[in-house]
Amino acid sequence: MDSDNMYAIDRIEEDIVIAENIETKEQIQIKKEVFSFPIQDGTMFSFKDNIPRLEKNEEIKRKETLREKMERLKRHE
Image 1 (cartoon, rainbow, N blue to C red):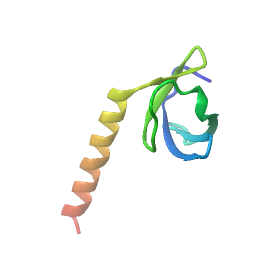
Image 2: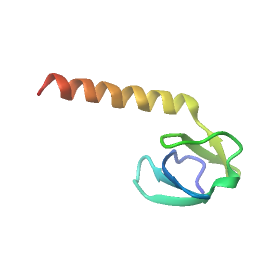
Image 3: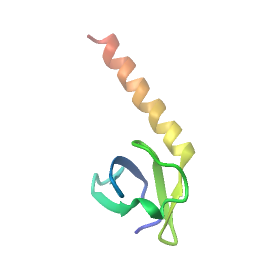
């Protein structure tokens, strides 16, 4: 896994995490057990030495950007 890539968890299916590369939209599957932090849909992470690393600041920024987009769409209805 490339350490420069940022991923967002799309969904969790039993013990498998389906995550999407934010830039390329490529999906990957990872065993849930490799995460050392709590995860849920939308959790953002990258890899360091092939170990998932929580990217909380990026997650907060992405949620804010999505919220702003939704507000703009609501104003244009």
